[in-house]
Image (cartoon, rainbow over all chains, first blue to last red):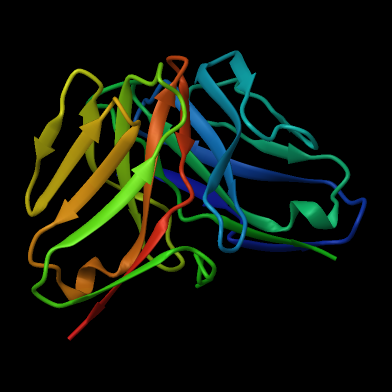
Length: 114
Length: 111
């Protein structure tokens, strides 16, 4: 059981380039989340999804887009990379929301924009 | 891996002592709270959770206390071990679907 898998693990982008961070989970979870974590800071919610075909903005959605065409996959798209998007990105999933439904996290994608 | 939490508040304890990590949350409508542990270079891992209709919940070596009056959450770790060294985050469930994280506290355990 792989859990939550993120690819790539590391990436360096030039300003203005675009890329997609991949996230897939094999636990049949309904809820999926994207967070970013800047050095010395907590996790900030970018986007989340409560099921296939449904996405919604989190705390810091600007500069990002997501899609959820299947239950398993929740890719995060950066269209015009900016230095402010240098961060570690974490994808997470949970079966439901609320009590007794812990979120499982991937190992993270470290992105540097230069 | 990357060392997160370079500028986070730090709690230093001696091995075997008890640790208390505190968290203030912002939304009085939050109905569910979770503590996560994050080791360097890894994603957060679930430790323990508590519903808003509870004041206390105990797990293995960990206890979470919730004070809704002052919007305060704490994580108590008994007999702290070197393997407990990590950054600890509280998170609150807001508006049914959003899971929002606090700033975090770095726990350092000395022998």
